[in-house]
Each structure stands twice: as C-alpha cells, then as structure tokens.
Amino acid sequence: MTSYDDANIFARILRGEIPSHRVYEDAETIAFMDVMPQGPGHLLVVPRAPSRNLLDAAPDTLARLMPVVQKLARAAKVAFAADGVTVMQFNEPASGQTVFHLHVHIIPRFAGEPLHPHSGTMEKPEILAEHAERVRAALAAG
Ligand code: 5GP
Image (cartoon, rainbow, N blue to C red; front, side, top):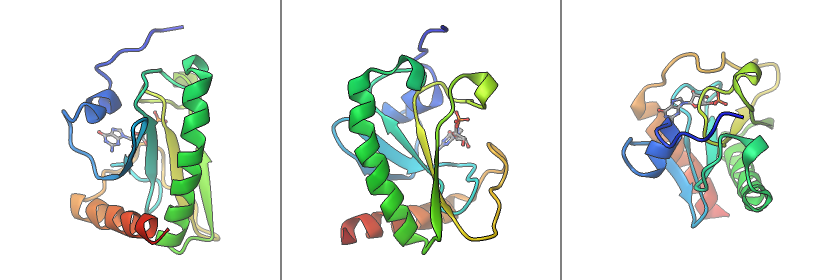
C-alpha cells in the first residue's frame, strides 16, 4: 500500500497551516466543515493520528473516532433540522478517496433531496462559517 504523506491537506489543517471552519476538537480528533459540501452542514471528522484511511489505521484510532462521529452526527441532525444523516468514508482512489488522511463524512439529509456531487462546488466562506456556528451551538446545547 502507498504510504502516508504528511503534506496532504488534512495534515496541513491539523497543523494549522491551512484555515478551516472547526466545529469540534479534542486530544485525538478534530471536525470541520467540508469546503465542497454535498449538502448543507457537511462535516469531516479527522483523527489527529496519521493514517491514509481505514485500511492502515490503528484499531485504537478507529475506536476513539466513532463516538466523536456519533456526537457530531447527532449535533448536525439537530443543527439543520435534518430528517437523517449520511455517514461515509472512502479508502483509496478507486473508492472515491481524494484526500489521503483518514476522515469520516457526516452529511445531514432531507427527505427527497439528493446529495450534491462529491468534491463538486466550493461553498462561500460566510455560509460555511454560519453552518459551523449552528453545529457548535447544537454541540453546546448537548
Ligand atoms: P474524500 O474524497 O477523500 O473522501 O473526501 C475529501 C473531502 O475533502 C471532499 O469532500 C472535499 O470536498 C473536501 N476537501 C478538499 N479540500 C479541502 C480543504 O482544503 N478544506 C476542507 N475543509 N475540505 C476539503
């Protein structure tokens, strides 16, 4: 398997070299808005530990990641008054993965509304900022 390259975009976001609309962080994980959302409120949950994807991740990393995914999926559903939430994760280019640091997508869903294309259109920063604020508020409300 190809090895982990720490010049990837999410490693740079983790190091603070590139800005992001962060909604959550703890000792092991961060979460921020996807800049090309497939729907309003599309979040990415990213462990700090380096791995390309699920295939080379340490089981410990995965075990600590999922409770955060659940917390954020619940918050995103409330924040956007969504009918459901899609949680997805890609492994290697053939699957659709484009950034090679493990991450989980969380996308609020609305009955009858399809997803926008993957890595499609950049969202305006002011919209991402407003959406991030909604998620933070939902997290704070518990
Ligand atoms: P993947 O295809 O690897 O599963 O998902 C990568 C995701 O990262 C895509 O949904 C894409 O829109 C998003 N993305 C790509 N570049 C950036 C960036 O610089 N910042 C943020 N916040 N998201 C990004």
